[in-house]
Length: 422
Image (tube, rainbow, N blue to C red; front, side, top):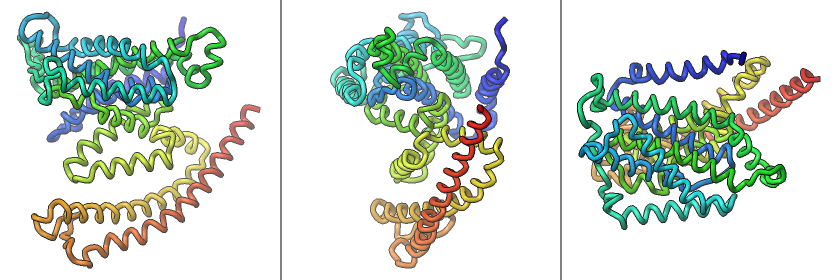
């Protein structure tokens, strides 16, 4: 009789519970729409990590599969609304998944003939090719305006019409849960294991009888299937699909989200998608410089946390178990406070520069952090200058101390693990 993994069951049960109660907690304003976007992007980021994290395939064109899946899904939705095909809205994401897999088989046959940098460059060429076609084939892509639809078709089924946003959220949550389980199950399959071997040592994988090219090809098709499901959910959520869905910009965003979360961990892209969507959507409502802040955040993660946020999280249990977190926490707190001071001063300067450059017609003064600041007077720049002059040197000094303590604690943990094994 197979053993029941209680811990894993609790994790999946907790994940399902979070999906169920999330709209009850975040129920103000546009929170529900934000949750829907996060759900679709989590599926897309997880599917991308099948290539990057598990297969070592850096792709700059993954949005092609989600975008083309979204276009096929929205056409299927319009055909269903016209009565030409009988397919419920609940299964429309599956249409996007099948379409994504078809295009994955088509483009992947070419892209997976090479690996490494060559593979990445070919995928970049593919995404630019598809984006150009989106403006050249208006019947399928809808030109610059895209293709629109109405997700409410036919009679409600047990009161479900997908008109209210809450119903769309639970549809996305259902597919998110199913796809997450399926993609995690993939990591436990022989193909999921051998793609790790191809990532680490393709020559040895070939020596034991596996063709690295075909392993990459099959993995890419499966990844494209889940990306297509994400595209289908996006089509239902927004009721419009445009050329932006197949652009290099969207492909780049997925890459950023995955790296920020941590490509080396299964749950890393989930964290990255949640943080990435929150920053891109919420910051854009508050500041015109949101892309600058998001880019800085990405650079800091790559420089100081190459394992992503998930990598940092995974260190915490070991530090707590060993009792050494008390050595790291004070230095970490001080470094974060100093960094926050410098960051606040930097953000104030950026916002003041943006105000002078783009909103000068609104007057010289601007509201920031509850204060009215005159951007045309020297004293208005004094506070951010002081914050940077105080916070930056302090952060540099405290960062060195934190790295020293962190390295010492990590070395002690490794020694303890060796002794325990001995």
